[in-house]
Amino acid sequence: MKIIYEPRFNYQLGLLKYLHPFDGEKLSKVITELDSLNIEIIHPVGPVSPVVINEYLNELMRKLVLSKTLVFRALEVPKIPFVSFDFLDNKILLPMRLAVAGTLLGAENALGSGDIMWNLSGGFHHASNVNMEGFCIYNDIGISYQQLRKNGQLSETDKVLIIDVDAHHGNGNAYSFKDNENIHLLDVYNADIYPTSDFTRNRVNFPVPLKSGVEGHEYLDKLNQALKLVKADYALAFLIAGTDVLAIDKLGGFKLTVEDVAKREKIILSHLKTLEIPTVVTGGGGYSKQSASAIAAAIKACSTL
Image (cartoon, rainbow, N blue to C red):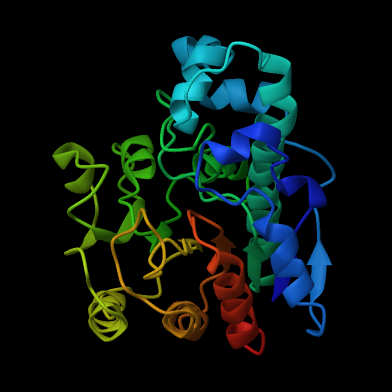
């Protein structure tokens, strides 16, 4: 297993950090907690290019992602008149484009080696080629899939699995791949909270909708049942490992512990490794002070796989 990290993955938000519960610098804390772990860290050479992003987005979205007002709305913070688009681009959108490059780097390396690649950022599962929302501007898995097809590392008939264990349903991925029968989605999410689109929820191949207040034992049991349906015919898997399932998280509505999160990732990655499916882990959501510790604990639990 290799970790994908770049210091610029972190969001230097300034005053904006008081307007959103997201800890913009948590990934640097993860790296600090992993200091004693003998694990290789790699990084993208730079952010994914605007050309690649525009190739993925539809014509209207190419314009909308340049709108300060609409980007603020997607980031779920109020518009601040004195904050320029250049500030947003440098402090938030650039780290996101680097995260997209990290997911693509992980996918290329996973396909080449068959190993697990863990991108600390990414997992922007609410974005699509026609929309941005939920603190997700660019869909890193959609863009990565586009590039893997373009460079020949994935064929038109190769099957790809997306396992989403963020507390929120991955509506952006579901929409992005709505017409692609070779992309299969396994989504474990809180059915009581955003996003509530029946259209995208119905696109999920292996849905695991849960109620608010679910604790670790029930969550992991339902996850295990869903994983039994996953077979070994996938060329690649993506795992969106959101930590907003933690009980302390104010947005996810679940009651998992740090230990539960570590068990969750080990269960999933062990299953995928048994099936010999190359895998890329991405960050997903996580809005509590325990998020960094949960990510670090999960990496430590999975480091020997």
